[in-house]
Length: 584
Ligand SMILES: Nc1nc2c(c(=O)[nH]1)N[C@H]1C(S)=C(S)[C@@H](COP(=O)(O)OP(=O)(O)OC[C@H]3O[C@@H](n4cnc5c(=O)[nH]c(N)nc54)[C@H](O)[C@@H]3O)O[C@H]1N2
Ligand SMILES: Nc1nc2c(c(=O)[nH]1)N[C@H]1C(S)=C(S)[C@@H](COP(=O)(O)OP(=O)(O)OC[C@H]3O[C@@H](n4cnc5c(=O)[nH]c(N)nc54)[C@H](O)[C@@H]3O)O[C@H]1N2
Ligand SMILES: [Mo]
Image (cartoon, rainbow, N blue to C red; front, side, top):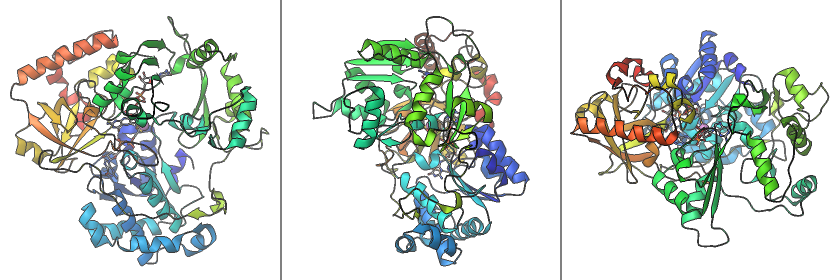
């Protein structure tokens, strides 16, 4: 499916995804769908913008996703709302799923999810009977230690109701960054070459060995980023211990969980390279900094979340001593004894598609002409315009061509609230600043909208109980660390949970998060830890601390230009302009 099809769904089931803040362009499609008459069900513990326009908001307890998904399956099965024909013709494993979800009656699930049983029933009926239901999900699913199971659970719903393989239906991971799909497509994963070709398959390896003129490519699966600290600090096997770390387009010292451990690992490494378009927190620990060009200074291809390849073009000449990422990689490779030379990105792309059967037909020329080509696109002829529906007509990727039901029990998150840390700590996004904030933090316009040390969203009741007021500096603490940020009382949040965004350098929420990982995706549980909030009695001291700390960070990050509002003491006036605070 493609993003534009969101508009034509009859029902949007939006699960742990906050398009209004994270993807405003996609969010417009959601609003258009609503205008065209679509029903919307929003599943989110916060009252996000989608919840405001939704027909139903299932405001579930944090960390209870699979209990809810299994209960919806339970209702669809028990009320015989399944599409039996689709299941019989296109799926396998249904009989094994039934006993697993049998336990998840709406009443049982209510105890875990805090969603009223009647609402679960109503949502299940709406989803199963709309005639054309589309699921969109985001980080509220993926950033849990039980994440992949929930994705499979959502797929179960789509398969059992036949909402698969046609326009405006199916299950849509609205992938995060503009090119995160592309990074995976190009093989920036530990277990595959470009085009999802497994490194453990000797025939695939041989193909790449031949093409690249090397004798032997390693057949072991590499190391996921979230395993790096462990492999540096605690790996017993000397052959597996990591000594050098080449990091590009990533700022683990800001975006990875448990930052104290990340810093320890970076400092323990013998050699750290950081290749970036700006200075970032990781750069503080690097031995070598390699300056690269940014997105409008070079050519390339991005993949959108709908598998569509799109060309990006150079708009401005790079200034100063910078090179494109691919030129840097070629130069390093050549210096290390493997000469690598390309004249332009088209040569790289053509080599790539010739080695990836699923991409083989997506030439530069075709992408240029069509604007976007969705893989698989196998034939270079213009008649092959790519594949809008991956499972068209109910044909799936398993060898038997059938979809597979997969059911399992809900597991609670790893670190639960307790006497010392009584609140749920969850981390999300806000409009206006982007991921590790190197890009948006270097932009004065955006800094003037919102600046350090960011906000902690809390329920009005919790703020009253702790005697906290809007804008007050507070200390948020977990077992692993703490940070200082401002308090934002808001009706969007239920009692007992606190939300921060992860881009602030001072209000760095990853000081608190933990590296408990999903066993399949290796994604950390960014959406759940236990925390407590402490009032800071001496606010004048805290304000001064923020100013001094920020001055030092800006100095290290080389941020030029006029001082932001924080520095100028303009914070008080800026409150109403804050996009995050506006949400209160
Ligand atoms: N402005 C801005 N936009 C961005 C980014 C940015 O940093 N800034 N980052 C980009 C990236 S990398 C990504 S991956 C995307 C992510 O975009 P989203 O998927 O929207 O990510 P989040 O805001 O982290 O989380 C989505 C929602 O999950 C909810 N949630 C928390 N816990 C649970 C739970 O237990 N169950 C359910 N069902 N929901 C829960 C949160 O309340 C939140 O509203 O955004 C991209 N867009
Ligand atoms: N607590 C918490 N932590 C999170 C998350 C969360 O929800 N909560 N979300 C996680 C998610 S989904 C993601 S995707 C990550 C994102 O985290 P990161 O990937 O670390 O952050 P980004 O800001 O996307 O970019 C990383 C670096 O790439 C640089 N960069 C930008 N363009 C280029 C380029 O063309 N070339 C080079 N060489 N460098 C470039 C930027 O300057 C920046 O320093 O954070 C994760 N961390
Ligand atoms: Mo992301």
